[in-house]
Length: 232
Image (cartoon, rainbow, N blue to C red; front, side):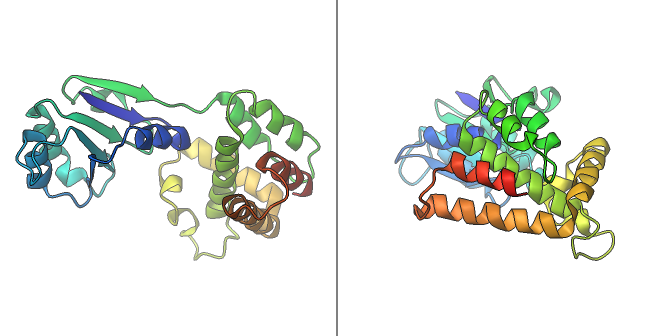
């Protein structure tokens, strides 16, 4: 069985992907994969016999485009292996249709969260209330990851980012994939904050993330985000 996991909710989709793994699983990176390796694993010619769970990362990235057709052909000749392919973005129907019989697991971020992210402004009394509205449709950890992403994108697109002219939006792969209208909205939002506030907020987000991972904060994640949104 072939399962393709994709969508713009990267945090949840990645968690689902990793949850499917077990001790006998084999993971391939499509950007550096040796086609013979995956072919042997799929057809039972691997060193330890056939692998029942195959995981493939980065198959839809630009770097792995040279391997795409070869991997696809290997999947067509697979026997009874359980195959999982993960993408860090939403994959179109045309590309999905190229794969042999498959199951799709799609993870999409609620529009409620995007509305909250787009509404973020410095010194706005609605930041906290919109954040709590977003929590009605997603977990705190996911919303936090999206807040981090939003500020990272704003910094990447900011003309005052400190990067050479014309390079501001090229330092992040996510920026390259944005549509012109998305970039326009983010640039306007970034200008409302300015360089200094964007960098201060991003540093605070980093400290919150580190404190949560190390258990060094007396507050939970939700409380830390509330305080941050009051301070920006």
